[in-house]
Structures are given as C-alpha cells and as structure tokens.
Image 1: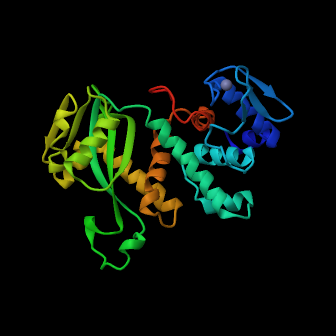
Image 2 (image 1 turned 180 degrees about the vertical axis):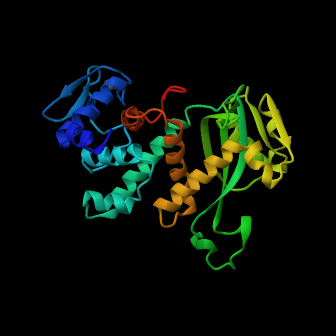
Image 3 (image 1 turned 90 degrees about the vertical axis):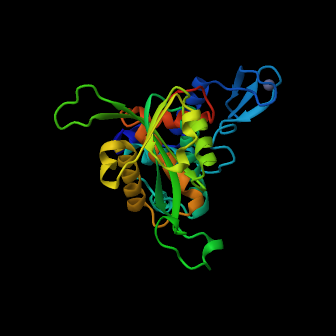
Length: 309
Ligand SMILES: [Zn+2]
C-alpha cells in the first residue's frame, strides 16, 4: 500500500475505527468475564456487550491499543510506516510526522507495535535445515556501567549479545549466480551471556525438535545436539563464514545497517524490540500489501494459533 492508497483508504478517525472493528470481529471477541464469544455492538457507547453476562468492553480493550488515548489513526499511520518501507522510523521521527506534542505516548505506541510483532513471531518454531550463530550489536552503555573503564571488542559494555537463528535450506540445483541456500524464517534473541544453558533455553523455545542445526564449534553450543534431531558443529574460520553460515550473517549485517540508519543510539533493554521489527518484516518479505492487515491482526490478538501468519 503506497501513501496515496493509505490516505484514500483511511482519510479520518472513523474509517480507521471501522477497519479496526472489522478486524476485531473477524478474529473473534471473547468476553473477559465469562469467555462467551457473542456480543452486541452498542453504537452510542462504542462498546461491546456480552450477550451472556452483559459485561461491557471498549473497542480497544484486550488489544495492544488498550489504555492508549491516542486516536486509531495514529496507530494506523504508525503501522503503515512500519510495514510499507524497508526503513524503520524512530519514535522522534513519528512524533514529528504526526505533529504530536508529547514524545512519551508516541514512544509507547511504537514499542507496543514492536512488541506485537515479536509476540506474533513467538507463536511459531523454526524447523528444517538451520543456521545458528551469535552476533554483537552496538548499544548504549547502561547507566550502571558508565563508571567502569570501557572495554574493547566483544566484551565491551557497548555490545549486546544476540542469538541469531535462520531456516536455511540447501537448494538442489542453484541457478548460476544464485545462492546455494534458501532462507526461510529467522529469529533474533537478545541474550545476557553465551553460557550453554542460556543457548539451550533459546533453542528449546524457538526451534522445533526435528530441526537440523549447523553452527561453529563454540562451547556455547555443546547442548544443542540433545535438543534437536541433528547438530553439526564445525570449526569455521572467519573467511569461511559467508560460505558456511551465509544467512545468519546476511541477517545480522542487514539488521545492523537498518538500526544504524534509523536510530541514534539504542539502550540494550530495547534492542529486542527493534530486532522484533526487523525479523517480523523479514519473515513476511513476500507479503506485500497484506502486511498492513497482518500487523493489525497481531495488534488485536496478542496470542494466536501456532504458525498463523
Ligand atoms: Zn460475558
């Protein structure tokens, strides 16, 4: 959806509200009190009323927009910005575009949307042939570490560790000039350390048991073979990474470039949210115009069925 289409489709608050209501009803409304799924729409109050227990519910309640005083149109514009371009937008930039006085509500909205993105992707597991590696992302030095002398390299207080997992299937007869592996879904998870137990937990939560994972032979990865069907760990020299683990490294460098181009400095506690956004859009790169509606659905239903995209 380009900007003209967006403006034509959602010219005002009412059109956004109607669309939001349509998506809510399409996904099904559940009473918070009794779990009943049939409701009356009270037009004058703009509330749903449970047909069984008469409990009332606003249009926003039970969605990521709950408690937000911002108009639906703000949310729609933000969803449009997050899904229609290959770029990302800082909350400051969105605040400027909306001409809104206060920064905090806009910041909150943007992070809620990124949370919905992560939540949606948490509903499915990676499977099949996979690559796994860790990456180090530049973040702001946390306040409690500002007094310490700054370390260099991987152990620096400016670096945040991220576990990167990609479905990466070997292509049987790749066309000349094309990659030998085809990427599927990806995940990126901020981790506190590289201990084997930490890695094991992430693999358990994000990867299907039938997966076949390839990684380097780091001691962080010693537990993986007990969790999934197959784990190939091999010594990989720096110059071989592109060949052995191509997709984790393409994903890492694309994510780093996106963050660098869009944000001034990222606090380590927020890095996961930005990675959610990157992975969400990457995993839906062929969806085109459907992306807008998909993110609206993710906002309406924070948890949903497995592998429902
Ligand atoms: Zn009820």
